[in-house]
Length: 180
Image 1 (cartoon, rainbow, N blue to C red):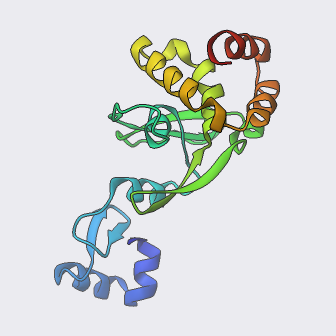
Image 2 (image 1 turned 180 degrees about the horizontal axis):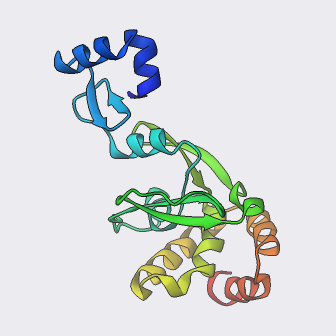
């Protein structure tokens, strides 16, 4: 379990007791301000403790939804458009308009960590919107996997999302030509 400094102070009483617990390996410092009850911590758990309002998106979300077997080198995190820049080398920050940020967000368990992630329907819209920013091979692999599961998707959600996003005509054209 990952704990913040404040949670550790509440648990151990004061900074001296916390440092003593770290020295005795009752708790482990994983990053400045973050501690773990286990010697080795899940990186995803650390990131979501550090950035609790973040939402998984991009290549990492496609990987989590089993739409690609390519393991991304970085975590793609969606934040509010006016959020502060995240200075974490493990993260690619995607700024999203406030009215679109929570659209299609779901919570799921990934390797024992509860995370916020965009659903498959929202990620299909993201794929079509951002196809020019990813490699052609990755785009084709993900698109092919979407075609295999199209019967399992909630089409009404895809239609709703397509109407809400900017450049909806382009999204609808790509849906008709490449997916449906």
